[in-house]
Length: 143
Image 1 (spheres, helix red, strand yellow):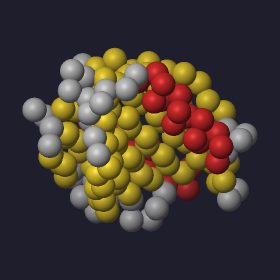
Image 2 (image 1 turned 180 degrees about the vertical axis):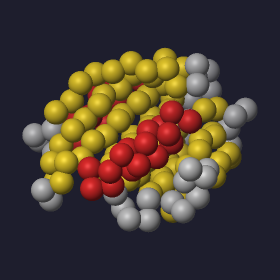
Image 3 (image 1 turned 135 degrees about the vertical axis):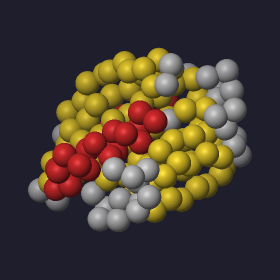
Image 4 (image 1 turned 90 degrees about the horizontal axis):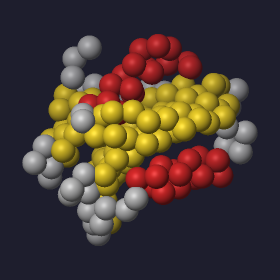
């Protein structure tokens, strides 16, 4: 798998070169989204320089997903992402007769809180899942 690297303003992550990327700012919050050309996988990385609590941010992201998909299954997870203890949730849900999965991860550094949401559809097969999970695991501070 070939890889492209996003590296700007202290945030670095890897993503497939054929994925579309979009970046937005809202005060202290930056959001960078990458999406597969077929739309079956994407990741959203959000940084907040006000450093809110990672558990609260991960739980708020879970609640937002529950609002859209009330029947989703979730379980809490802890994962190390580039030396940061990340809290979060793994999700499974149905939409448009497709099984979808998502990973929410959140961690705090001395500089910011980082939220990562990766989502993929079973129609994309194992490759879609692997690509999204790679983006999630590659997130790090670069400054």
